Image: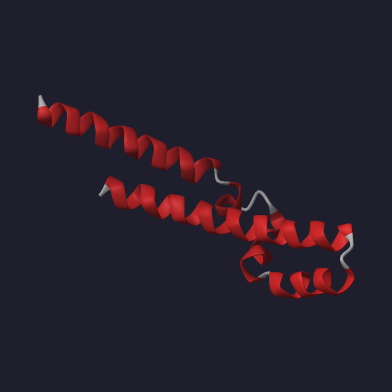
Length: 86
């Protein structure tokens, strides 16, 4: 019973890892500008917002943080899936 459960659980994780790799927009290159998200300098946008306190700068700062988070979380979820799989 335990072996069957382990086999089913491992197979499910394998399937979810494959789905994750196939559907990930950054890894697959579906989002063309996402290659620069890793190197975004959000500190510059924070400084610009602190100086001007405008809504446009606040939106740029928040967008930068969200892009960096999405980039990091997509790759970390893939790594976690593969780690749990093996």
